[in-house]
Each structure stands twice: as structure tokens, then as C-alpha cells.
Length: 138
Image 1 (cartoon, one colour):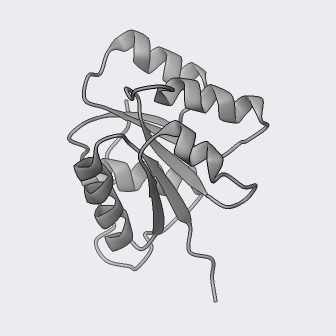
Image 2: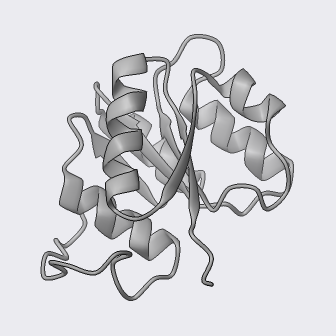
């Protein structure tokens, strides 16, 4: 009936990929997980993914470079950056590059949901239930 958004998750940490996938699926979205930017880019097709969640620090191409690459390819797909080592300069680079959010690990479930909904232009939570926490971003 209605389109279920597909969220791509790119993180070199398998446990983090699995945890994010489970969380996002419980939120009512579909997910596909990749162990790095190269694997994601090799599987990328126009319109396949509705949003990307990527780790900032990964071997090879990092999340900020991945976002840069996507923009160079003409992609306007929303990007949510996550990191275990947040820093103001990295945050500024990510947001200036077009990221819709820059979140520290461990990622707050409600904050992530709010950013995903905003990135996807949704006014309601997929699957219904508890919709009162729209924590202000900063």
C-alpha cells in the first residue's frame, strides 16, 4: 500500500550495524546494512535508499567523504552521521556537507527517530505509538 522507507546503514562495527538495523526495523522502516562506504557505493542505485545513516570514522572512506561522494554523484538522499568521537570540527564539516544530523554514540533512540522522520518528511511515526518526544535538536 504505502512505501516503507529503506534506510541504508554504513558502519564498520558489526554490532553497531546490527543494533541500528534492529532499532530502525522496530520503528517501522526497512534497512540494508553495509560494512563500509565501498560496499555501499557498489550496491547504490538511484532511488534505492530513502536515507543513509553512516559512521563518521571508518577505515578507507569515512562518512564525511562518503557524503561528499554522494553529493558529487548528484544524490540528495538525507544523511545522518553517527560517531563515537564527536568533535566540533567534524560536526561542522558534516553539517556543512549537507548532513541532516550529527549524533554521538550511543545514539539516543528518540533523537534518531526524530531525525529520520524529519529527513523523510514524515509527520507521524511509522507503526503508530508514542509520538510525544520530539526532542529539540541542537
